[in-house]
Image (cartoon, rainbow, N blue to C red; front, side, top):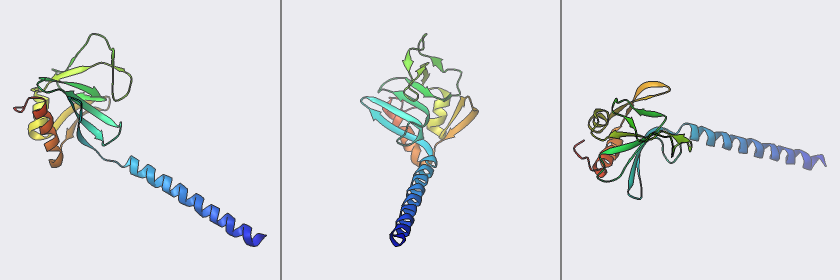
Length: 156
């Protein structure tokens, strides 16, 4: 009986170790996903977001529709601009990033902070973690340009 029990226990042990290492490997891959700029379209709305691709892990998202002069901003960080303003008096808007009630803010697409993003590939932001800059790599610059062009502000 021990001839069968020992190999069976050893096989179960190997299967358990393999399953655990696969789960750890999947967690490490998910945690190491890089943050960057992503452009998506939902109906007529364009969404430019800084976060992990194909996830809800976003620091900032700006939305607009064609011809609008302003973007709606959501997220844990906001563009560092004195021209950023609340869009409504009450906090009745649901933040698409957190699902909680949030204050909707708007910013002109011609704001100097957004013009710096479009021209130089950097956006200064503020949040609970402080003041810092989100940069755009060469591949992402095309996405940022497409966002501003789609919103009708190619001159930004």
